[in-house]
Image (tube, rainbow, N blue to C red; front, side, top):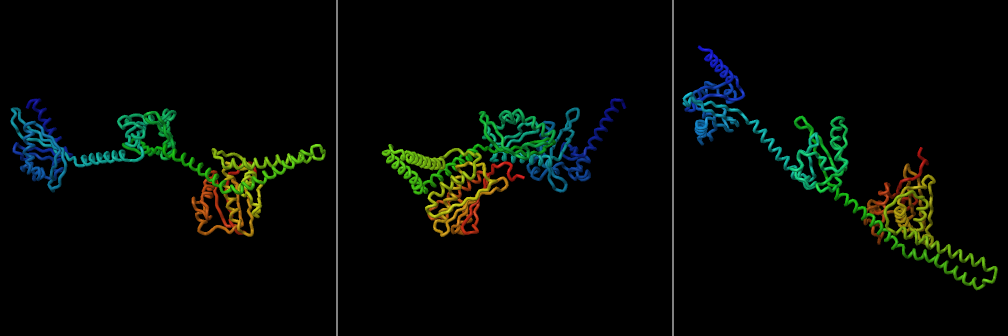
Length: 507
């Protein structure tokens, strides 16, 4: 045997050894008629057919009954004969009748003269791989459906900040299509200086693990395609996929919410103003009486002065004339101050807090809220805490709270034998508690639980807005308001406001 023949023999042995050693797929030979002539160990493991069971049988045993009825084996042989190779994904049958999806290759084997010697077939089970691919496709379809329907804008980026996916809501919010942003840095959706800082933030997080938004959420600013900026709530989650980090951001546009909050504040301000105007309407008759006193006194003093002018030559008349003019001027100032206080109380302006003297605020409120109280036999007492002199408030709004409480107290004691109202202030940590106590008949049991709700009133003609607005004002100042029975009979209303005292009682 020549050296060349020996080499070919060794290659043939090695090829046979390779075929016999391949166990992850079935490799076998069939003759031109489709009869199995060679069956490998891999074929036994895959199909369950032993060599002594299948050799000499038709390879059609490996086809499903449906394929056999459709004459699929003959078609595969014909195609391999004509094209030398036939390859497809088909269902095959094991010896126990179970079916599996296979990658099947059928190769026509020919001699040197082109004579058809038979066929070689390879069958590889791809059932699990195809199931995994279909599951992946279903997962992608599901993810796409989420991106298309999730109400909040959703953006997925990798650890370099590059956009991987962009939901339909994000397209509507930012004005970009997913194709336009995929693969680009997410910083394109941010205004400066956040745009320039974002990559460094990602790098810093990966180095140190320090979180600013991830897993926390915060209010940030976004930028649309047209350059407009808007406030948004951003929540970011982190996950690992195939050994790398990905970040999913959920974005909610806060533009409408902030506009609604601004409108709500405007409506609250308007309601508070209307409440003050309404309060003045109910106080109109008493106000006329209060103003009538200084105006009448002015008229009397001026008439007396006129009479004294006729006696100007009398040296004793000059002091009396001066006194009459002084008293008239004093009464005019008194009337002017009263009108000024009422104008400030009714006027609508911007909420502006400052440091104010609490006894002065209470005194001015008492004059407004209890006009004519003395004539009605109402006695008013005040008890001021020396450690609660200065408070940080909007003076006019807190006066409105006090006027509401004092008017309610005045109405509560109007028909009682004991008509007393007591106003006290007391330092309570960093706050000041203001209390208005009356000796009336107390609160009705059905009214007490809903006392501070809008349109809940214990008065026959009341609208039920005074205490509701008072609660709004007090809570806007960071305090609270409540009511409790007066041990001496009647009701005590308390509310707290921020103290502006420094160094007093702060051990």
